[in-house]
Amino acid sequence: MDVRTSRPHLPSFILMTLLVAMVCGMTIAGFAAPRNGKPLAATPPMGWNDWAHYQCDFTAQTILTNAKQLVKSGLAAHGYNTVTIDDCWMQKDRDAKGDLQVDPQRFPQGMKPVAQAIHAMGLKFGIYEDAGYETCGKFAGSGVPDGGGSDHFLQDARLFASWGVDYLKLDGCNVYVPAGGTQADAYRKAYAAESAALKKVGRPTVFSESAPAYFQGTPDWYDVLSWVRDYCQLWREGTDVATFDPAKPDRPRFHSVLWNYSYNLPLGRFQKPGNWNDADFIIGGDDGMSLAETRSQLALWSMMSAPLILSSDLEKLSSEAIAILSNKAVLAVDQDPLGKTATLVRRNQIMDVLFKKLSGGSYAITVLDRGPSPIQVELHPADFGFSANSGCRLEARDLWSGTNQSATSTLEANVASHDTAIWRIRPSSSCGTPTRTGTIVMIAVGSHHHEFIDHYTRCLTASGIVEDCAGTSAETWTMTPSGTLKSGGKCLAVADSKTAMQACSASKAQHWKYTLLGNLVSADGACLTASGPDDQSAPLSISACGHNQPDQIWSLPN
Ligand code: GAL
Image (cartoon, rainbow, N blue to C red; front, side, top):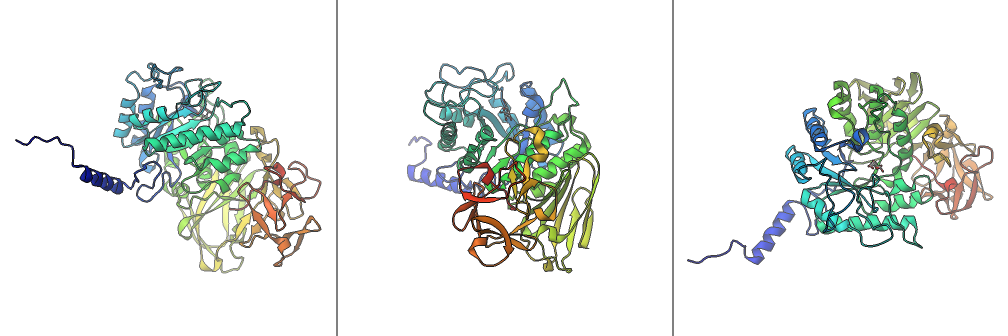
């Protein structure tokens, strides 16, 4: 008898492997390659994470109970499909082989059965680690040990793949900075090393970085934001949303939601499909958040194409909160394939109006009431850069009530305190293609703190000053495809090394180039500079471009 091993003949084995790889849409290199033609996280990731509700007060049971609830509530079927275990799952020390050790009190059966149970529910499995030598909770990190030595990025990535990890959140506490090196370099090296490790291991893993969050409020923030997307699919760029505190369960948390929204909104230029700014967790529906505030958080995150990662006790969500978080039409705004960040069309002390381009000729509009009482506002197509001709009409669907208005030229919003109205609109053909219209804002120096939400951004006005946004027409700008900045029918120009509003012409003095770092650069290479982001009295100037100079960084209509 001819006894053979079951090992296939080598050439056919290679062919088979190639075939499987092709069918799975993977390249031989595997990681981050298009699957079914789509990159990883082609639309903003969605799911659940334990941190904002439980912090370190959880066990495997907590995770599995919430995973079941994600399915049972129908939220998973609406796209919230990844369950991520945040900090505190591991021990402080590694084992003799240098592997991470799971906390046996929290995970008596280890991590793999938890991952398997999550997969068996049809969900994806995510885990937290840290690019430093310790996590923020002081457990073993993957990065270079304090004082130098070998990192554990590859070893840990192998362990995660063996558990079936589909999503990795890599925080950035305690990153060791060698003598003579810069902090930004140390972070870049650490995140590049993790990215290389994930590639080498080859399991498609959505990678979430936190590097920019550690530079918020410093000039390096913009540099970090411009390289972070080379390594990952999403990144946290700022402070945490308020966590649930069992000692003060009624503590209001909407303030922190507004803060995260405020710092995320001006960063739209850094994101694109497959690379997302992460404004942090959705705490809507959890303690300290009303239904109006829950609507606001979902609508605002959707307007920014932000990841939607719930972080609440899902068993305690009311049916009303679940209905809000499952609103298909709002979720479609978030998951729109263009992945745009909304433009801040208008901002005053209590109200924000946003406008977002969607695929297929539609747009979304929101009105947020940040103030203590209801507001009423009328909006017209020209506010969003559509033609002002009277034939321009909008089909508008109110996404909370589901009611439609046809052929309207006025959108009327009656918005309750802390609530957000949201419409999906389709313009008639005479509205034309909208020009990029809205505010030009600058982040006020020293404002990277919660108390400053209302003053976080300041608006460029046609009178040549930067002031607290007041929602006036002097704060409305249009950026044309040829790079002119128009307000009140005039164009911003450089004249005698100063700025001036002139009749629009084809003059080079009216041309501005907008860079990824946020500079508005004149034809002769100088930068539009505020007199100081906090100083209202002095006029704008034109000066030599500095590197990440705060008074030269602008956010324009997207
Ligand atoms: C923070 C992070 C939170 C959570 C926490 C865990 O740095 O922003 O989302 O992960 O660490 O310690």
